[in-house]
Amino acid sequence: MTLAPAGHKKDNPQEGLAQIREALAARSVVLIGLMGVGKTAVGKRLAARLDLPFVDADTEIETAAGMTVSEIFARHGEAYFREGERKVIKRLLEAGPQVLATGGGAFMNEETRANIKARGISIWLRAELRVLLKRVNRRGNRPLLAGNDPEKVMRKLMAERNPVYAEADIVVDSRDVPHDAIVSAVVNALAAKLGCKVKPAPKATAGKKSR
Image 1 (cartoon, helix red, strand yellow):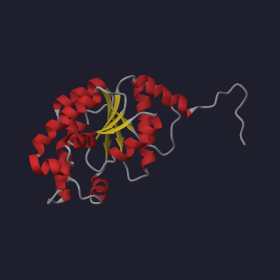
Image 2 (cartoon, rainbow, N blue to C red):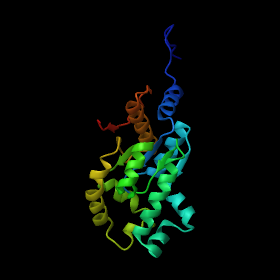
Image 3 (cartoon, rainbow, N blue to C red):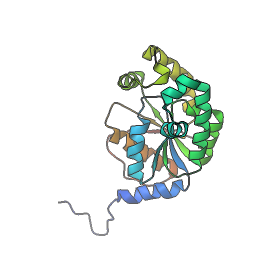
Image 4 (cartoon, rainbow, N blue to C red):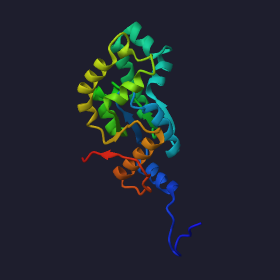
């Protein structure tokens, strides 16, 4: 067993996480990015790490509509879904702090971006095409991919959305590694953004945009 030198205060990870929660105040941590980047999986683990509630916007939309996202798309179309998405996210942001996972197209709405900026810290989980394709091909409930070539659709979405996602406060690369490694990267990036001291986690890579 290694003992710390006399007078040396050991790092307490919980203190650092508490600092993050205090710095957030009523703001939410909002995860954005394309389908397959891991917003829900990372978000649940991040919420547990920060001791905050986790909310999935798509789940809230499904609850409000009484049908799945796929059913909303099929019955009413994408425009109808996007309007409901905008309203639900606005309502959720008023109930922070929390970790909020949003759908891939949510951040494309100008009003939603403004609401997130006013009431949250946005984190773009960015991933390479090969990683995204590997993940989205595991699930068959992606409305935008239904009946289409996944690679073609994903390339198009990346071209359209990545420049807008780049407006996020923080960028973290969602690599093909265990989700906990991505969570550690997010925590470290949040701490840097908010000016908190958190003991860096090993093998966690994150990028933070300069403002």
